Amino acid sequence: MYCIKKMTDDLIWVGANDRRLAMFEGVYSVPRGVSYNSYLLLDEKTVLLDTVDKAVHQRFMENVEEALGGRALDYLVVQHMEPDHSAGIREVIARYPDVKIVCNEKTLVMISQFNEMDIKPNAYIVQENDILDIGRHKLHFIMAPMVHWPEVMVTYDSTDKTLFSADAFGCFGALNGALFADEVDFEVDYMSEARRYYSNIVGKYGKQVEALLDKASGIDIQMICPLHGFVWRKNIGDFFTKYVLWSTYEPEEYGVMIAYATVYGNTENAAEILSSRLRDKGIKTQMFDVSVTPASEIISAAFKWSHLVFASTTYNAGIFVTMEALIADLTAHNIQNRTVAIIENGSWAATSGSLIRERLSKCKNMNIIEDMVSIRSGLKADQLSDIEAMADGIIASFPESAGLKKGGTASPAVSDIVDPSTMFKLSYGLFVLTAKDGAKDNGCIVNTVVQITQAPLRISAAVIKANYTCDMILKTGEFNVSILDESVPFGVFQQFGFQSGRNVDKFENCGYDVRAVNGIRYVPENTNGMISAKVIESFDYGTHMLFIADVTQALVISNERSVTYQYYFDHIKPKPQPPKEAKKGFVCKICGYVHEGETLPDDFVCPLCKHGAADFVPV
Ligand code: FEO
Image (cartoon, rainbow, N blue to C red; front, side, top):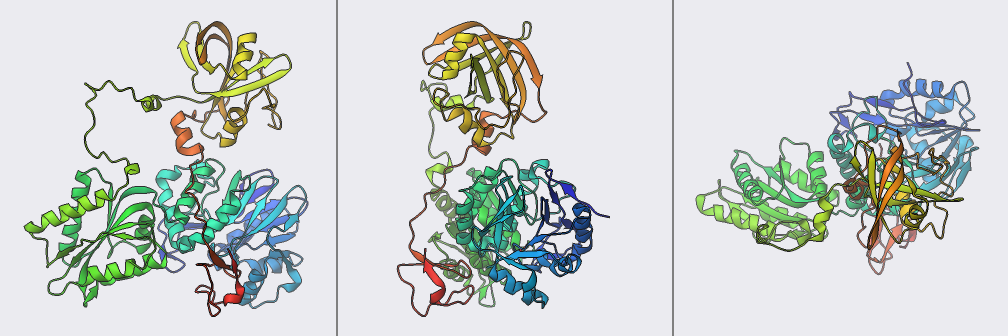
């Protein structure tokens, strides 16, 4: 029986979940399953975006048939040829022989390689920025080589502002009946799986992901539909910010990941003592025994934390086997920009430390702390100071911005300093304050609406005197408060907060026109309530007017949570991006590999796709 999810009036999820897969790509355990997403767009033409893995093919075909409702399939867009998304191509062509396969030249080659079939008669070849007009929707194709294979492209529906993002923005884990990230507690339950997916699947290709993010940052995206995991329609900026950090190999958090390889527990003991010392000093730590933890989890943690400690016993005159595999995996995934400390153990000839140092020093921008701790069989009492010194060395390498308390602070009891940032500890809501003067509607963002009394129901609102809305309220004595909820996009703050109503109509092109009983407009979207109020007193406080007003109408719009000032800063306001270095280099036209440097040798061979210098162009 089919199992589909309607996403919008004309977009349907037709994918499926697999909870029996032991190893994704034969390497990564997926104890919580995985979803294979496919999307069907119904317009004047019908368009299927990708297929699924063979494990869930039958359910997928039932889904497609049901979602089509008896219509033929006009287009199959193949964004990515990895078989977990392309296993259904042959069957789709068999069932819908007139279907056009929308793909790029590289994909066309791969379809033949995987299927031993000539699909040229069905092929509809696209290039960067080509547009497929299917009626109301216009599909724009954007090439995304090496995110995660060279043929990958993503598709942007400029009508509904939806990005079909292929492997980008994906996540391990079955969907369990939900489809949107805002239907689950993504941060708590899925972020670690999203990080594990990113770091292991595309972590190596940070440059190429950055290139895609650059392209994506230039378009208005209201929904992201990846090939694995949840669809994003709220707080897209939060997840986008994670991708910026991951693709540039910047840590998400200051803290220490400690990975240890131990045979009889003595190396583990040293690692435990270090972790304990760090915790004593207020540093977050996360520990892994590399012999029992899947490497994909440790790689994921290495992408998260700012500092990495590797503790390994010596084995066969080298690094312990599981640690050696982890180090190889980490370097293959291009880990960089980290501070590293090393503990080695060896009962007669300890070599693991110097070998780990040698291998990690090949990674970019690794600050490897000079003094390692070297143990003979087990840590001795006189070496506790070495561990203490290592903890101090790690802490010393934390930047000021890590927010660690270094040194004392003034006692609150004797300090008479007024720290303005203390005001940010107050909790505030955020509101659109609207007013009407004749034919002119206007509104502004405030965080100062407070209930004063219950009977009569009375509120106060402080407004900057320079705001046009303030003038209008002073003149008319009435206003509305639209209470913003957590779904509010940054655009609403730009609309009402970053421009003046004296110069523009802030409601132009907003797509709604609703008024309260008092005739004043309010904001019906991304809000959970609306209050109309009539001013009974006004107070001039220099920069602000404080209005005291009786409530004349109040209505609940939704049960979404009200947005707070803190939530706005944490989840809505775009984070400042690290400045981009103006790097010189050459990019491979075939796979997107970037070779940094002033020149490219004539005999250069791309380490990814093996094409020669002729296929490179300057960045
Ligand atoms: Fe899920 Fe690269 O494919």
